[in-house]
Length: 64
Image (cartoon, rainbow, N blue to C red; front, top):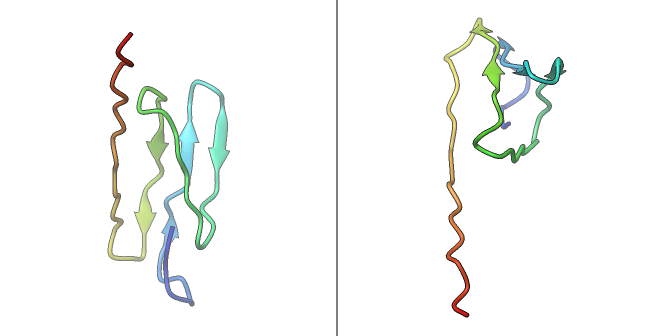
């Protein structure tokens, strides 16, 4: 998560419903999770929305 201070929005925390965990966002933070993990981004208010950069990683099987 990146933003300039003062933060111009509220919300945007991440919820993991299968584990009943809510993770608050913190400035200059990176989160890496498996794509199969169910998650929800809580609504952002008082701001311009959000951007998400996704990188999928695929490992090729080793040749035996």
